[in-house]
Image (tube, rainbow, N blue to C red):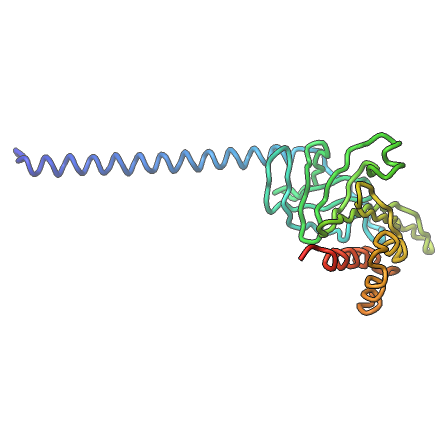
Length: 243
């Protein structure tokens, strides 16, 4: 059967369309493969560290910052930002752990971790400074900190939970107790604050206003010291910011 010119043109156009479709599919597959390799590289980087040790079943409380549950956060790690990473901070071992796709508790390297951002605070690792700088307030002791969500005057929260043993009859429980320190960065110095008085002393130019605000809002510096200090700093920032 002999094809005329119109039939040949249609046939050639059909083959060209097939080639274009095939080419587009190949490009899409290459993009998917590249994306898979990138994500696999992330997995290799984040999830091949050592696993966190399991705690015994007879335990009261937990060693983690705020909650023992993993939370979704953004992790800046080895120069790359990873979103939706499941993470938590162990304040007993001073280690940040991530939950792998296989539900393993993996410790990430503090040397590669730049920050982990959660809604209430940003977790950072403070590298070691000379001891004389720490004593003069120009630096913080090394370790993990939660930088609270303030503006001009950052509030840094450092918690350490340590285990003690409690005997109840024949049972011995492991009980975690907490030590908490707060620092406010002002005028190039990290000021340690422990009470409402220490915050008012630091911001003495608005002492009356801050004291009134603390009373009106019922801030508790005993049971909820962290949130009370943060609330007071935020209020100070709001009444002193430039119009």
